[in-house]
Image 1: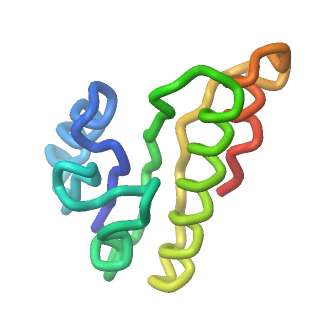
Image 2 (image 1 turned 135 degrees about the vertical axis):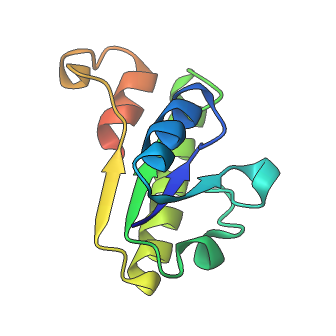
Image 3 (image 1 turned 120 degrees about the vertical axis):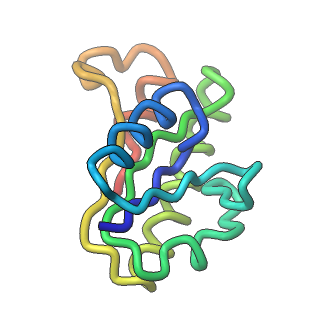
Length: 116
């Protein structure tokens, strides 16, 4: 199975990639350093061609309300558009357990609003 991991070179991404590769999957590490940027949309169409699953581990660099919300909304829209074009059937997004109970922080509101 071909799996695109957004933020695949990060801490969690490298562990997920290692495990999936050991299971025999074709893993693509999506990161700006690899030419795949969920925030700008750069490289998404190419990376998703023939992809079966997207695992979205991307995170905002800011915990402030507006930048976090902008990051998750923009990256989410870009990923949804690219996966729709490529007919990717499965999209897994990392979130936070109980985020719906922590809505006093803008970052947590942004995580809850992340629609995929």
